[in-house]
Amino acid sequence: MPPGLRVRPRNNPERGAHLAHRVAGLILLAYFAAHAVTMGAALAGASWAQGVAFSLAYNPWVRFIVGSSAAFHGLNGLRLLAVEALGLGVGRPGIPRPPYISGSLRAGQRLALHAVVVASAAAMAFIAYALLAWG
Image (tube, rainbow, N blue to C red; front, side):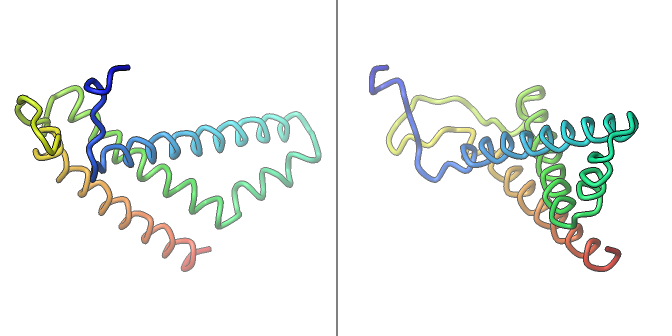
């Protein structure tokens, strides 16, 4: 690929959000796959599945990780729907000039991303509180 076609701006939180969205989705996929396999096996009468299902359902670390992943993945997914389907916060296109900061990172999209991070952190704090208070 020619060097002029690939622009990688520094201080781009979109790249981090993209990676975190994918990782959260993979965590949710792994949890739901494990849940489906163990519940199916437990209903079929497998003795090993009951212990695994119990640890998936009642382990506070698993619950925190899955809840936090679901909160971030859901909130960031809503932001992505607003940006990609409705074009909200994308900004006006322009001719790239140094320092090569894309227009979308100067528009409302960055504010929406920061709002998603703050809301996800609040959701994670609530999940941690709920796990500590109610077990």
